[in-house]
Amino acid sequence: MSWGTELWDQFDNLEKHTQWGIDILEKYIKFVKERTEIELSYAKQLRNLSKKYQPKKNSKEEEEYRYTACKAFLSTLNEMNDYAGQHEVISENMTSQITVELARYVQELKQERKSHFHDGRKAQQHIETCWKQLESSKRRFERDCKEADRAQQYFEKMDADINVTKADVEKARQQAQMRHQMAEDSKADYSSILQKFNHEQHEYYHTHIPNIFQKIQEMEERRIVRIGESVKTYAELDRQVIPIIGKCLDGIVKAAESIDPKNDSQLAIEAYKSGFEPPGDIEFEDYTQPMKRTVSDNSLSNSRGEGKSELKFGGKSKGKLWPFIKKNKSPKQQKEPLSHRFNEFMTSKPKIHCFRSLKRGLSLKLGATPEDFSNLPPEQRRKKLQQKVDELNKEIQKEMDQRDAITKMKDVYLKNPQMGDPASLDHKLAEVSQNIEKLRLEAQKFEAWLAEVEGRLPARSEQARRQSGMYDVQNPPAVNNCAQDRESPDGSYTEEQSQESEVKVLATDFDDEFDDEESLPAIGTCKALYTFEGQNEGTISVVEGETLYVIEEDKGDGWTRIRRSEDEEGYVPTSYVEVYLDKNAKGAKTYI
Image (cartoon, rainbow, N blue to C red; front, top):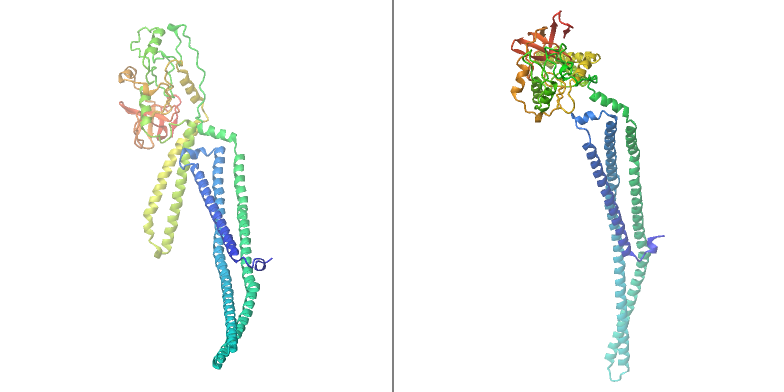
């Protein structure tokens, strides 16, 4: 099977067919190129999708990824990022191994095809020239033969005519002989050209054209083989990344299998556990005897004069009246019936449970988060303090490494003065040492707070008792009662069930409550360990080394009430002072 023998007369069709083959190859190249663009676009979209759902740094989302379910989702995002990378690999390999190679091969194929068909046209032109020469010699031989016949006929006619002179007859005879000679010459020339043309034609159809068509056939078959190899490569490039894609999918499955609901539940406990104990039981209050009602810890009329045990809100041992009840300034005045007092309570405007809580609550909203995280529940406060201590320790270690590096560099300078001046590092070394000292003091401060919190968390009986007392003083649900006063001096832990936006309190509403407050006696002294700027309402500023009077000890909220003079008192963090209670005071102990 050879195109040279089977298609010897299909030169034009072969030219069209080979051009169609090149067009098919270029179409396949275009297809692969568009596939690579799709792979790149798909990989880019996958990467953008993975990046879109990645947790933002230093945000709440980053903390959420501690849970196993979120970790599995994060692993899925990372695996999808790797999955996108494999599609990029497919695109790169197809571009380098198929598109680029075939594009170069197409150029070579076009040049080869052009050369072969140029040779074919050249052979065609040569045989056509030979044919034209043959036709020309043939026509000349035919013409000379006809001329010779006419000259012979004319000579015979002249020779038969008696009226024609002998000279005319001789002339006609010579003319006839000349024409016959010319005819013989044309015959010989025609015979020679004919033999030459037959030889050229034989060479053309049996040698030149078969050779050229055979080369074109081989060229076309190589093109077909190249397309087949490219299609195979196309599939192999896809198959090469399947194991890696399978590993990506296996990673997603493994991440899904690592989800632990129990662990997530434990993490939720650690994240939201407050460290408080549940409230105690609420005592029964008998309203059938309004005039002889037993005064209890959660009674609405627990005054200083009658109640032996003071009502405690959030650990503050200060005798206060319920904010909705006016003081009975006349000790001998007979009590009003409880029904009248209850009606007055129901019809009166809701008020904040104490003036200090109002001011501190506003201070908390306007101010920043306390440095010791005292606005948080104990368990959450302990975690924040521990986190802060760890961060400070890392910074200390970093500064120490830097100090060691500077020290080594200084030793090198001392041994080799030409490398640098050792004195030039003294300032930097002193600065780093100063930073280390500052960080250590800061770490000691937070460690003190942490030790204080950790020391109190296990023993929660007193804390639970105070919380129970807080819940015992709540009013029935139908009344807009005030929540337990368990706030720190900056307003933390304050739970107000009445909406502050709807409460309008005049300054005169609190006058009767605070007018008759007696100054609390000093129960000891304290020395300021650190300087404290009392920026929030209800706090007091102290200077390191200053000695002040203690009028109310820490009740578990991290604050101690002190006094500088008769008119200047307030709260400071317990960890900022060293407290010395009087020996006669109940439960005297030292806080450091």
